[in-house]
Length: 86
Image (cartoon, rainbow, N blue to C red; front, side, top):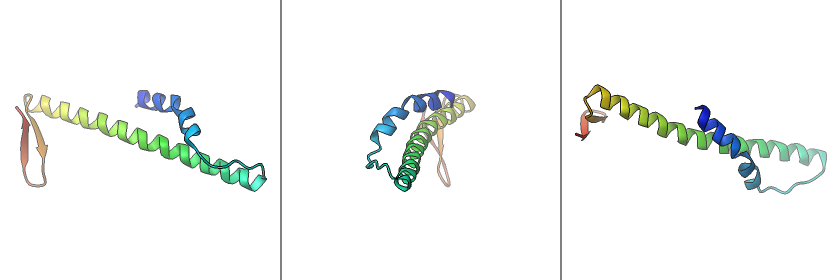
């Protein structure tokens, strides 16, 4: 988790650069700009972290399944266990 978060923090300049909204110096426009920028960065961080962590969790689950079943990998379908790898 900390590695994924560190990677995303290093990627913040890219997210900010990808933010493509006109900048205005009026006070109200500045407030809206900041809110939209924060929303853009938050969405970028969350989506990338979710994908990264989902993959990591899936890998951990599969590794645990292999250990528990003697290196045989089973997938749980609503009604059946299916042997995937022997």
